[in-house]
Image 1 (cartoon, helix red, strand yellow):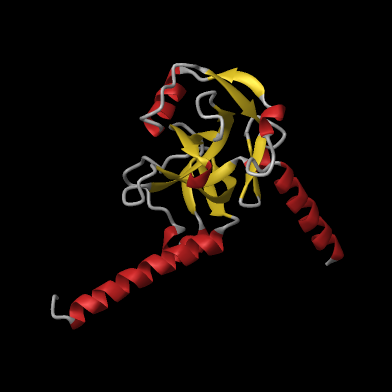
Image 2 (cartoon, rainbow, N blue to C red):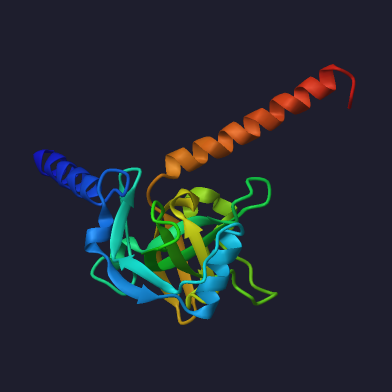
Length: 207
């Protein structure tokens, strides 16, 4: 138990050191550049910003809400696989799985950090049936092994880390590993709210 507590303390200390809300991480940054696709995606994410500059400041890892996230092509690759929301509209956003390939700050938005993520897409074979789905959210699910589609997201769009396990030449198994209880709680709250609205409509004679 003492070893677990020491690891928790070490992890908390590291998370505090890498939290952009608590520390200026720009001192750790290296200069890099966005390619045309990345710049277009960032502009789509920030439609009212003027983003002519392609030069950005990049870091290999940071923390958010006490959890560390890292870039896949770095020593922090173990923290790069995430479950995230694609899109910022709460009514239309969808959950995606991917790996972080860049963590950056744009000179026009110096108070915010953004993540470039390559998505592990759903299996494209029309005859494919995911055998894990029948066991529910806690059993995980399958995705294409090679990450392809590019996304740029904010820290607030991260849901949790995931564990990726290769199970075939072109398949990986995805298992969410943290923030899962919060995610399930939010789903429960959404379903409960919808149930209450349905019950209210029924009792008022609107159904």
